[in-house]
Length: 358
Image 1 (spheres, rainbow, N blue to C red):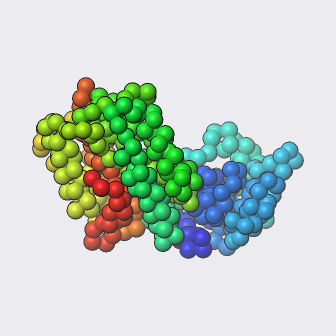
Image 2 (image 1 turned 135 degrees about the horizontal axis):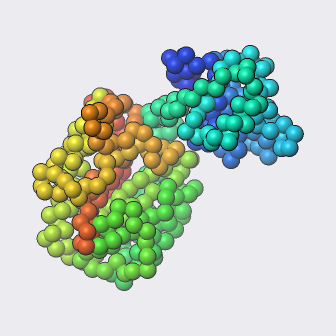
Image 3 (image 1 turned 45 degrees about the horizontal axis):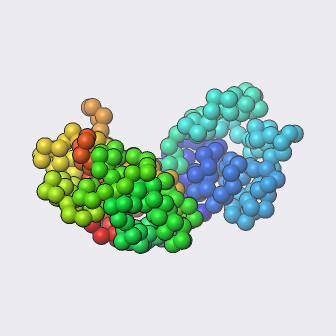
């Protein structure tokens, strides 16, 4: 955690920020290690405080030993009052806050408590930018989550029959991930068969998987707070020529993207590696989402591998980022194919972390 604080303080200095209030739970965990449901961090170049209530007094000491505790008491000494005391103690004139994670009501209470002596400055994306590049501890947790996910799919696929329903298959996947060591799921598993596979985020229902039609399975285990994300498309029985053609197209697009990813490549250029290949085959309108997204403490985080806004361009990939690579083709009334792996961006390429066969 010390290295993360060093990086945050350097980023604060670049923006000219003397203090920041970190309230987003995932950012709070990233910087301090604290996993409790309530609290905030106040960080300056020389101080690191954690504000939480008595339920988490011992937990904060165990999980966030680098942070000094300021205890919130409700009623009596609510969060804004404790924060105001801390800003006076530290002699702060300005305080950055995470506007994307602060409601209007919370901002109002904080402003009232601070009075006119401390100016509140919005500072979005500061911690999220740091989180995009994973350190060694994060990669260990991610790789464990990925391994649990890969093994769960290998366990469940042989159990599926055309009579198995989507909902039953999703439950088998959930059980396998839990029994394999997952602390939770990254998201409820998606199992979409036949025409349902044309909907990228279909929710499983009590319909048999059937034979000879596409079945999209999207799943992920969570371990140590970090998420896995894996998609495979399979057929029970013999696939027809249309499936083989579309599957081959999506697989080739994914392989082109994986071969071209590297640090320095822009996110929109990464998306184009797969999108241009799919569009050249006449299915551009059937690829309805971005190529991928960052994965870590959130299942969806930066960077986003997608087309740039008109007149703009994406941001460069950096070594240490972990992203999904998941091109797809979705055809209404027939179904779809999506293939997804997680990769680690390196200086001269990328390393595929997912091991499930394709």
